[in-house]
Image 1 (cartoon, rainbow, N blue to C red):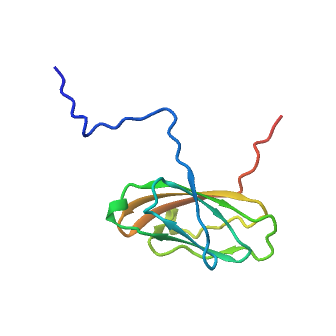
Image 2: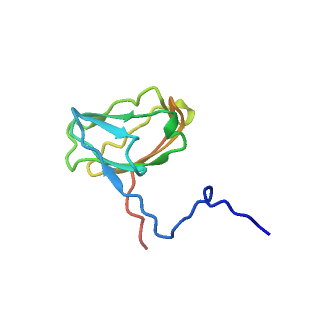
Image 3: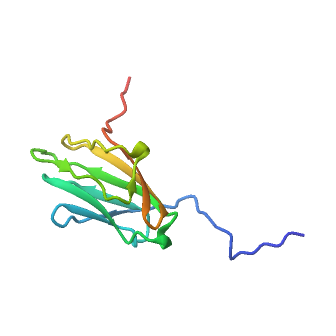
Length: 132
């Protein structure tokens, strides 16, 4: 006989969707509020030096992970990106080389691993898959 404690079981549905929370920039700073329900965010960059910050990074967020979709403007005469805050950890501790071309799309994945550490991985320069 098997006993199941339903308080600890996770139920998953086949059509789980995580919508994107659109981030509205304030003075070219895009703040990812980790208190938001859901895990995905979207940023539309402005023609300035843009900054990405994380708010509400604490021990209650450990294990939260998702994607930040970054879309560049159609005209990029002064588009740039500032470095991330000290709580952000990148592979090898390397600086992110943000794609600054017009209409570019990039994805930044994140995973909170401690109250003061968030792992970041950036992939840019997405383009249409070549067709035969």
